[in-house]
Image (cartoon, rainbow over all chains, first blue to last red; front, top):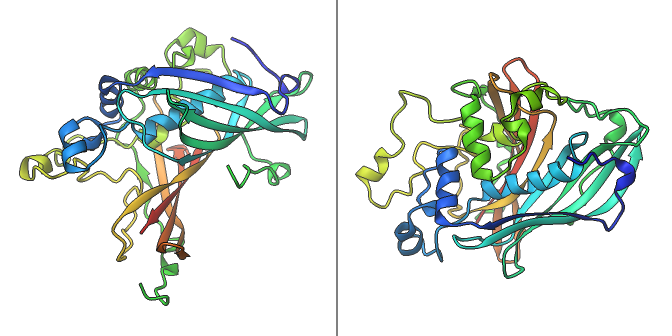
Length: 167
Length: 175
């Protein structure tokens, strides 16, 4: 596993992708069962379409959150920490869509001997449509700096570090 | 809706902390990470996990929001579908509000306005999650297509020992 440090990140750098491939009704059912979410729009096609007027059963928004968390966790590596993440839901994903998480670094900042990397993130389907967008703020160690504390403790010096308001 | 309608009394409303019905089990993590399709060994390989800063098998960072399962012995959540074929299967579940008192309002349709999450540490096998929800903001906005009720639920998750895990700020838009 790669162990990226702050010096490995630069503004404009691609984050990911993490490609999940085609998400079928079986994948959606597996997720719904694993979190015991019995909302029928996620596994009952007749209910989703005839009753709720949806195009098909929906891929859970909660599942999509974890894919974006994984995108950032993997990009920050085993020494980094995903501090903040934001999700905005732009459109539905339905059974049969292929889901890919990706992003780019938009700011890097060193504060108190730690590196902070701000990213724009999104989920795209096979048609290039963005269903979920957002931003994330990760913490990584400097090449010759101290480890990122775990558990992560928010110091007063970090207070000015926020996710971009428009993401 | 009258402009004078004031929901500010709900801001800050909280309830007693809610404790997950059982400690985190390794098999729960297995099913969970198979469903999110993340093969990180820290989620299943004891020896590998011990070599990391986590020191033990952990659940993914955002797992704690799903730790509040249907407790054994509680009423069957699927009974509603047997009574009413139009039931959507969500009866008895409150995965967003964690039991916060509902806000009485004339708005019918709810949209997910997004989440903002801060992470501090991951839940380990054997630990139990606790949720402390509160209404962080409840306000009426006058949008172009009519009035909206904006609700922000802020839920702080910790272990039963009091170690912070994450804070989830969920925005709901009622119209």
